[in-house]
Amino acid sequence: MTIGCNTIYLRIKLNSMPKIIFVCYDQGAGGEHLAVEISKMDCCHTLRYKTVNGRYMTVDVTLGRCRYNVLPVNEINDALVEFENKKRVADNLSIGSVNESARWHVIPTHFLPNELEEIQADKLFICITTPVNEGHLKNIQSKVLSYRYRSILELKGQIEADGYNPDKIITKHKGPLDYQSLLCLYNDMDINEANINILTNAYMKERRIYSFQHPVDNSLNVRYEDTILPNFYTDFTNTLHKQLTKSI
Image (cartoon, rainbow, N blue to C red; front, side, top):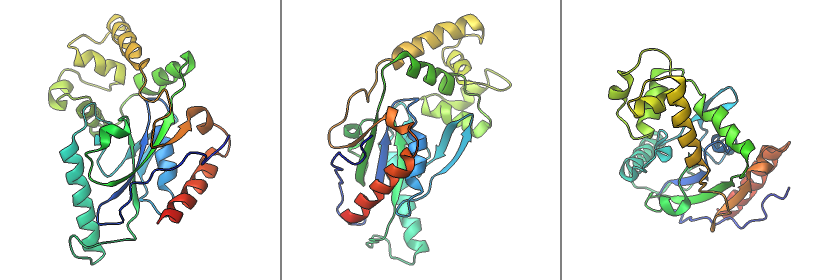
């Protein structure tokens, strides 16, 4: 495994704009896990997260909006401005002043770098190249479709991310829900084995069309297969940290 062989394209102006490391990935490729490990560097804001059955669930500065089906650009930019202004007040800095010691936000996202151009920030893109095989599809099925939501806030967040009204969806069912059951509610279908099979088959067919099947230009590309090797996260973050601090 070779780490750091790609040129890291940093869009840095060292001005008052926030700095973001976007971890771009397809579902099931471990993007939230990589984002968490990157955020532990001392030059980053540490992500809040939890793990459920090996799946990482993060809370970033945009509250997950960068993983919505449709990118809410204005809401994301507003969230970034609000955070930066609060930080400056806490640090006794005037609004709009330059804080050159500002740390990087780390945000996992399913969007390609060119789809994130309207986000007002200095950006670095790390893209996980998705393996194209049946094993990875099974990984998506086990991590995503069978995932059971543990709180009402988490469930509402997922429904909003999928572009639906949580209040309307939740009233259709009482009790715990997993994602494959949500697919039934989205389509106004009863939650039963037959309907789940129909909808999950359609869902998995869509997931065969990957955004990150090939390396992405102007990004640091990481193969998914490398991320599951021993010591990957330690080696990767050490190399990334050196390059980030060298560029400042």
